[in-house]
Amino acid sequence: ILVGAAFLFGANIDSMVAYIGEQNETVAFINDDADTAAVEEAIRSIPHVAGVEFISKDQMLDKYSQRLEGYTNPLLANYVVRADEPANISSVAAALQNVDGVRAVNSPQAMSDLFVSLQKAVTYVCYGLVIVLAIVSVVVISNTIRLTVFARRKEINIMKFVGATNAFIRLPFFVEGMTVGAISGVLATVVVGGAYYGLEQALLQPEALWLNEFTKCMWPFMDIIWPLLGGFVLFGVAIGGVGCASSIRKHLKV
Image (cartoon, rainbow, N blue to C red):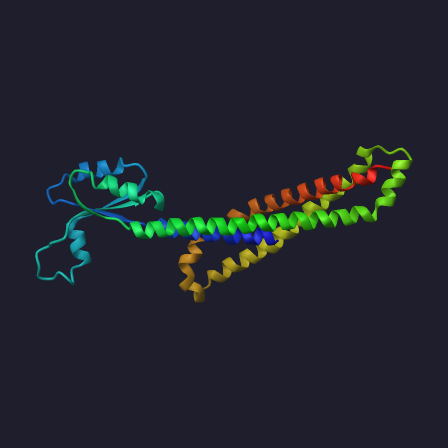
């Protein structure tokens, strides 16, 4: 449950930072006499360009019509260019400056650097927390398994004395550990998935519209529930089965 909650928190924070970073827009202003078709083709050929939108002088005038009413249109047509990742904004901006017909480039370089650093920090902190919690979970589960096996050491010794092989003795513990691990994985999925679904539904309510930007970044419940179930069950089966089988090793030496 702890590992799953930390993982979902980290994944959604990382998704939100990535979404904000994708809102980067580098604006390339072009000359009035530029061949827009050639300019657009050159821009689209630049590596790491994910999207290009042409905005004409008239569209720019409509946007700022109230401020420029009564004046000759002084605005330039431009291309709004989106990079595939914030880290590539600087290389895209540098390439845009070398395109024939481009007069000036306005690039949110400072913002992109901030989001790249923020995304790295979130990734390191959140997934580092997941790793730490996973290690703690393994230690706690292993100790619990050892206590369970220790309580049944006399049964193991009796089976050994009457001629049972090591594999025959390990098998019931192995099956039991896997079964309990699988059940634990399902229960953890119900708890964590139920809490996540409840949060998702709460954020969709009208009174939570001010969190709409965050809600759009969240992983949909149906996209995470099955991978979550599979991961939990596999984790539980692996820890339970291997932990039980290995914990009885010293009790087999009689």
